[in-house]
Image (tube, rainbow, N blue to C red):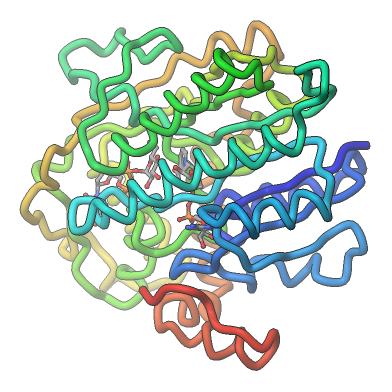
Length: 360
Ligand code: NAD
Ligand code: DAU
């Protein structure tokens, strides 16, 4: 029975991970540290608020004092770092916060863990630090070579400020393993989808706009390819790597599910239109817009290592996952309204006596 400290646990994947852990019986404690930026939302975690195994701290991973205090109090066996600025388009608008949170925050967390965990013999006992990274650190693949994939040994070649910051963080994590012998692990996953994803990312944005009969902005020619994985499958992979992965290793995680953006958008249109019995939701809403700067053409993950070593495989077929996701968004219009309007920050103030940190 392990004690977990999860950072960024009020965001999309982090909150799914916290819920995943607390649904099972394998954890003694889950402490969630989140600064509650525009992307963090405690609504996601209302169902576990009374659970004695769960605690929430509104703190910033860049604060050494705050993180040391939480780690001293919680004494986690495992630290899982999800906290990050995660949206590529925002990183193109303003790279600096990506460097500060994703690189500086990670280095701070590594330092704090090292100080708290390192024994007098230089060992770290059973502690483990897992960095939640991304396939974007590998750069891009070509549409002309469909049999080429990112492996764990593919050189890092990030293109956006977001992926550059994630790659830099990964290099620091590796350096803490090599230099200080810290028990670090890295997972690099492909695109996630599922409940609680902020409607700035492709799938929830398209659902949001389709319901409102608003234009569906497709970048460039719509042929860029992403490898989509249902979020619950990613959560299972992370916990498995944490418990059974080999310290110092990188594990790629992917969906074996590559699709062109335009096909994703058309699937969403069809399913939302069917569910709402609304013929006005149709391909006519698709609007091709200017391409993203430095837009990576294709991501494709070779997840053979985690399959061979740990027996992990994606369990949710895309057809089932996308239906579940659309149904979740249609049923949770209030959640969507709250996260997109900023009204949830007033709710926090009323409920918890504080407001979320940064505005959208
Ligand atoms: P998200 O943007 O939904 O959530 C990020 C969370 O981090 C938010 O709750 C936010 O409040 C919190 N946060 C931001 N800055 C913080 C700080 N300084 N201190 C404490 N908390 C802070 O992101 P997500 O999509 O859930 O991604 C989580 C992690 O997984 C990220 O590290 C991302 O790079 C990685 N990842 C995401 C995907 C994906 O498809 N979404 C795929 C692979 C890897
Ligand atoms: O691959 C993992 C990464 O997936 C994560 O590390 C990132 O945190 C996560 O945001 C995601 O990055 P992407 O840039 O791939 O996701 P996004 O949903 O922003 O875009 C998916 C694709 O859809 C991409 O090719 C850009 C395109 N797109 C996106 C938006 C928001 C559009 O065509 N129109 C849009 O409005």
